[in-house]
Length: 271
Ligand SMILES: [Zn+2]
Image (cartoon, rainbow, N blue to C red):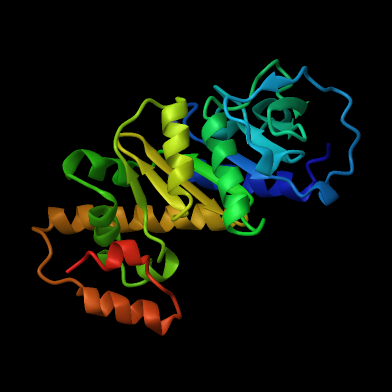
């Protein structure tokens, strides 16, 4: 596997960006990409035994994924991709997976593999195969909001839409808010996958965010926009709070101006 491979170049760039942003302390965060099998011109000769997935996912049967490793540091992906990353193959039935490349020091995929693969299965189906990338990170301003405020999907999305005039254009689908659940559990994986039926971002209370997109740049850009809005909110509050902000009608008009349709299950509940 050569680092000139386009998907390796892309994940190395994104890993650098995530580290520079401060969204991935220690071994925080994880990344996965559903690979285009046309791009995979290698003979994998280092296949691990098959391992059972906690949920059968026939929608991604036969697919290959580039996945960051459990316990690995995102900042080390550019330094040693073959230790920090692996490629896994899901069998045709979607019941099992095996490692075919990477994790060279005996590593394994991220402990959030269930959430990643269930989300990939949903997004592949919902977007006719367009969405391929998934990023989970720990952006500080956004996480701070989940401590300071009582939030649900509507109130969090409204707050973020209001904190920059272009937010509703970047994420008209809104941001799903999930109350605290144990990371790595099937419960949070199921809830996250279900949320991805309607949204392309999911916030985990006290923890961080998942974002999906057709490529890593898109998923990264979504998180960057949300985190910027959260930061603006905190700055505004530190200046004494909002003196004025865009009305719901203004938000609707901005979205319409860019041909975007805000999630009806959110905007129709805002007054
Ligand atoms: Zn995390």
